[in-house]
Image (cartoon, rainbow, N blue to C red; front, side):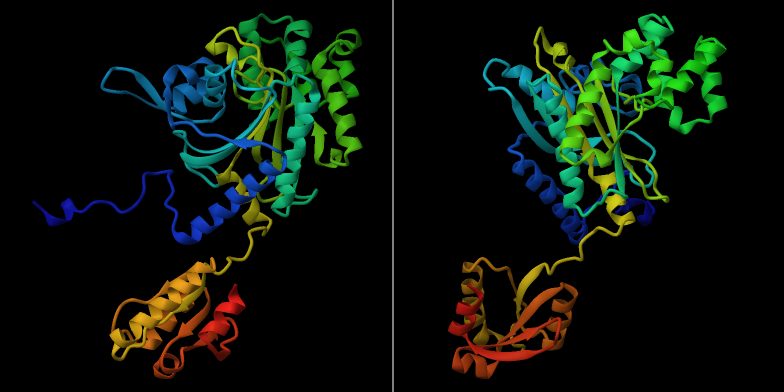
Length: 441
């Protein structure tokens, strides 16, 4: 057999990512920022397995996700399972499991890995991590306001400003009023047209109207849908009669949400946009998406919604719910596009050399210094390979972005001192060991 045929590919599965230490530092920065802001709001972290019963996603996640993107299989006991493509259904499963035990309101966040069979492209892969942030048990719009506040604080924590991103918000109840009350469509027709509306941003006006008419709408009805998609809060009454609009809880809820946003000086980040639909079948009231304003990357970064009825797939439960999921893949492209990624911090505080000549004589003192440094909480890398030239060790330390190199030679061993070389400046100084340890505590 040809020997080349036996070699395995070193590349990861298409659409998945390897994280080398440099990438891990960026990922840790993103995750740490997420956690810091969520905990600032009093949210608690949770987790659950990446494998879930297939039915959890088939019930409400939407046809495209289930039929085209889901990684699913049968185990050896013929149970149909799926690798989770999102975190919301599994989160609701946890709450249904302990419905009577968990005190409400529930304010939870999770960072989890998901998989979807999609075409890999910029800002999108088959494997990605998400921050899921939800409030359960509060029906009032104040819960949605708190979610919007967290979104703005997270984006601001990354250094984003008003001109870099915006939140577009609508409400499924407005869409339902258009489709059910104005266009008089049955439930199946509403679902069909809503899915076309969700694709509006990727189509020309002509193609959009053509697809609406192919789905059964008249030219007049198609025109009303297009007018709805571009309306503002004031012009909605030209499409949905005022007597219906004034009683629509989606409309009154958004009006109140903007009052709260204005009172707290964050309305500048938010605008009403009825073209926001969201593709999940469980999105049932308020819906919103966060958009990148970068001219080279004008796209949705992440989104969220009300999903009050999702828990009903597990039984006759009542649990108002609102929240969002932010992906690390799209967020990373946003941070890169606006040059918001921080400069890499030094991965190591100290690098301790091992004197190349008669290395075993120096090893005990070198290891003693290592132990004492680590006791202070500082990070420390010690060279262990005997006989390595000092120049080789220093070049290695430079590549690892070390803050300072500690050199121990004959004089340092004799006097219980160390030579400290600061890598940024190249400056060297000699200190007694005890003085050095006191200084870094």
